[in-house]
Length: 78
Image (cartoon, rainbow, N blue to C red; front, side, top):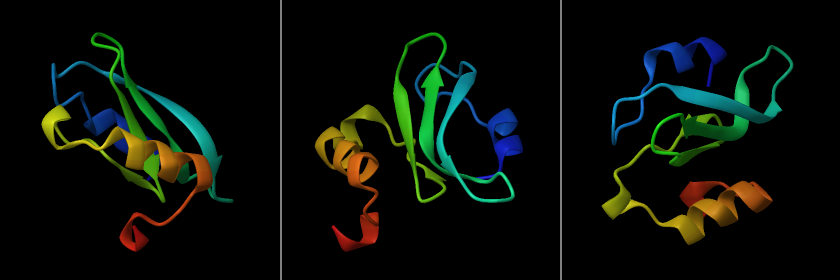
């Protein structure tokens, strides 16, 4: 995910701004792994392989998201 993408995103729950936490990036600064954190409701959305996972709460699978973040596995292989 390009860093400037954060300017176009908001929390899908309450439409608040998101803070970007970078855990891993490539040599040109694209975010490969990290989180987007809502300033208001404190929800956390993982970035896995450069893709922010911003699905509504009822469709999220925290155990799988956590595992993907922890060991960096490709979500297509789950």
